[in-house]
Image (cartoon, rainbow, N blue to C red):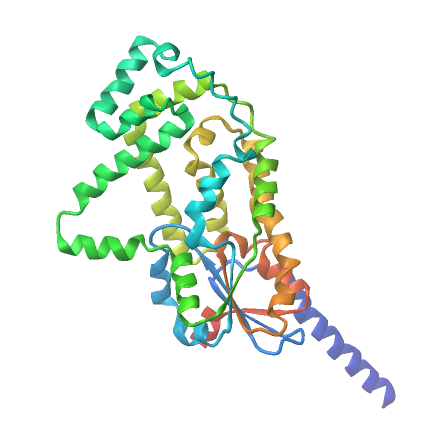
Length: 346
């Protein structure tokens, strides 16, 4: 009798271990909203994968009980303060994150003596279409930054062409709202404590680390690419828009594996100049630092943050899945992390 009882106890213990083991080995591949419980948490927390671009707001339509879940939390955890992101980007421009660029020539070197006659004609043609771009030559703005001015000019033209009716104005306003910004605004409206996972110092260290693997670009190469961009910006922007639409489609389908893969390609496409010169090795290094590296840093903070505070964590969906994703790392710490999609369908 005692032998039989011992066998039953060992069997049940084995089954329990297998359940926990299977939860860890079964890597998440679908779902954007996850419930975190167990491991002596006082109350559940939630993890949402976001999309850092236009259209991400649409996912809220497919998440049941989002409002009640969000308002049940008393703390909002995000990557960075997205509402102040433009200011952060401006600070980065003057930081070591641009160390892959050689110094711009001395002040007596201008576009007039750097560009060929043909290149000058191409630059003048785009300035003629938009007089505000004259600032590029007047201020002798280096080519890598001049590209951004031309991008904005091109987008302004496209926006003016699209906004031909009141309906378009309303729809574009909704579509252009970034999900991360909306959630942060919502958290402040409900007086939730807002916590950033990334410190400026940590982000700076990551950017500096990536820069060390990028080949040094001369100002002459920058100038060549500026002209290349002017001649091909319609094709480049069209490609990027198609790529972003593809990523958004995968995001709305809540496919974590494919989204992570495509998002890393998009991260480099954001910086047109870098996408022009980086290798596949640099892309892999960027993934390791921007995704895996940050996940590890965040996991040093999240357990303490959610220990006594019911939290709503919103980070890019690319950080959720995979062996080193947040879901799997939380499970390894004996948290129960369950997709709310499955909960809602049961």
